Image (cartoon, rainbow, N blue to C red; front, side, top):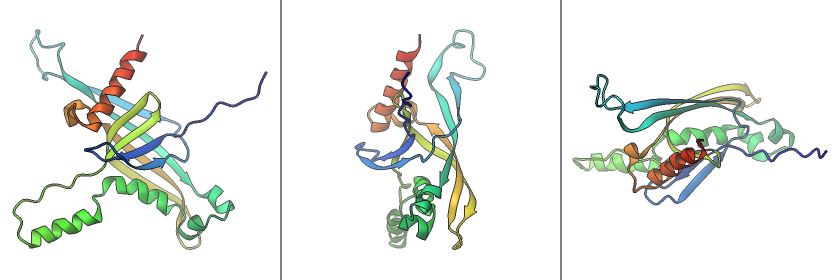
Length: 198
């Protein structure tokens, strides 16, 4: 009997241009979370629908995903990685945090436009975030909550171990439409699910 271990895939969070779908970045999860909590809330036609409407759905359910990601600098510190020695795990934490920030360039442009008296300033658009768990679970999401618990620090007070709680809402075609990169990703996600069901 062979003692070959299976190839362990890592979960990831991708960022794409929301209009073109061009990849912008990738955050590989250092360790896959031990648990993934999913919640699906059906979209019925109304709270008190009459009998003829009771089984009707307005669209896909509101699906949320929760997981806890661990980030640890032990291996990088043991290998004397210069960035980790200098900053700890702050670069990895920053990459995750920036998923919920508008870019500083857009903030500055909007401030300049407001100072110039521009009447309407559009809300800032972020990159499209995609949660990748395995080949069958690749879905567009919006980060709804991000909690970071820093648990250990180096002598310069850089964090070297942290837990990050991610709450995500799956973006479905009711949210983003069919003719967008997010809509296409969602439809692949749902069709794949339909194909796996017995």
